[in-house]
Amino acid sequence: MKTYYKNFKGLVPCSVWEPNCWINVECPTDNDRTFLTDELGIPAPFLNDIEDVDERPRIEIEEGWFLIILRLPYKSEELSLPYSTVPLGIIFKNDVFVSVCFYQTEMISDFIHYTVRKNQEIQNNFDLVLKLSLSSSVWFLKYLKQINQKIRVAENTLEKSIKNEDLQTLLQIEKCLVFFTTSLKGNDILIHRVKNLKDYKETFDPELLEDVEIELRQAQETTNIYSDILSGMMDAYASVISNNLNVIMKRLTSISIILMIPTLIASLYGMNVPNAFENNKLGFWMVLLISFIISISITLIFRWKKWF
Image (cartoon, rainbow, N blue to C red):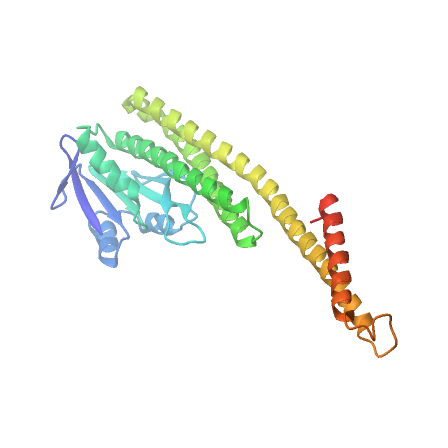
């Protein structure tokens, strides 16, 4: 689906394409591909590169066309991987500016509303690229806060758990953080290369460029901190789960030993051989009393030794 936005006190939608407007394409259809390649003349290999979910951030220049691939944070509905990253392709030349993403993200719509709310003016193509990069870093930080909440919930669950499924929740979060770390490093390298384009250095807003670098650095540092904390937490809770299992096994073993005593005594006095209480009317109750006294004694010993 493609939408058009023109620059007027922020990015406002328009019904048809106009020169110097932004064409945003999400989850492109075959008709969208035809429009981009046939009518706008965008090289088809660019779209194929953007479609690859593992495509790394980079900038390419071909026949006057600029291709910039930026990694965006993506919140998935899949339970196995709640957070990931996807490529956003930015293609522009002269009065044509197109962004293509094969996934529907929250960042794009939020960025458009933000420009309208703040009455931001887009100065040029690279200005829009930098502002999209700044927005992506902000959304990385937003999702990192949500990941931190998930870590806290998993931490509370694991304190009294012995299930591997609960530990796998942390493994999934750690995998999300690995994707975030890799993508943020790639975005950082991309911004560094864009900043060093010799012919366009004077077109960059230095304050905006500084903001982009600061937000990127903050997102990287936050991701690294959460990743380090999570790694230590997983090692600790793996030991906690093992210890909880040992405690349970120790209690079950203690209960088995305590129950074995009455069973042993009942087995001895139930044999078809003469015994001390065979003719005693109170023999059953005496055997029962002996079993009870010995079981209580063993229980007290276990409690004293803190085995039970």
